[in-house]
Image (cartoon, rainbow, N blue to C red; front, side, top):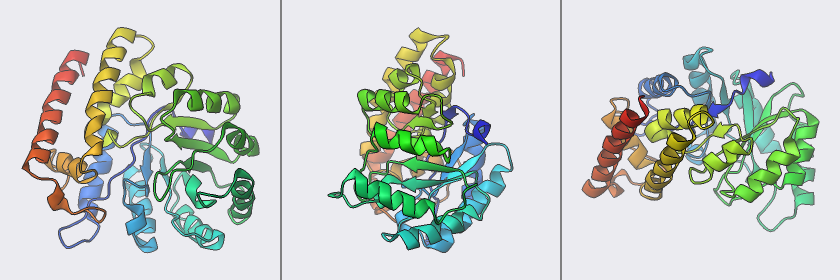
Length: 307
């Protein structure tokens, strides 16, 4: 099981919609192929970038099933999809996603306790949830920023790693110190840490992190693939690329995910910019120009790296 979760890049997938607000499975298939052609290690469906809080359970299940089938064994697929507040509701959602055959289901750390509740409550709720999930089901964590960000402590992460049920964590702490402590706590276990943050990525790879799982893989996945695969043997190029990726990642503070969908439309994968989380009209002419400039700079960087 553990060998499925390879080091490298695990994009947090977009969900393309038609202009009349239906999931566009033709575009989603093209997106899956694009990720894989760019060398990713795996795919993360039904996450925040997928607009999971604005998808019905039926849509979340169908998307996970479609992505798993489209990937067709080329790369593993993990999926989240639990948005309920109650443990029973979350168990229902996660079991439904698990039945699609994805390689792991991912738990959102902020679903297991309220923002003002302590780690003891969080752990008790996790135990209740684990009891409602099949013991053989591979699991992971995602420190999802919405509706609030809950960073799992290294001590709790060690407890989870020691159960032998967890294989994957998407870390959003944006802290080298926090990630370093987490990596120490899970050393020797089957649990792998994937950093969502571009600014700290190179340093955390050097500390033993397994790769990248962030939104910028929706713009230039292959650059992150190169960094994860070459940072040891080509440290000077890796530092230049890391600096480039940090600065270009500032675009995610603009109208994301609309701007990422615009990038995918420019690549020929998407037909519509329709987004349930934001009005697509917020991406004005200047915003589109910024994406086009990013794409040109990305091509230039590919030339520098020989991609």
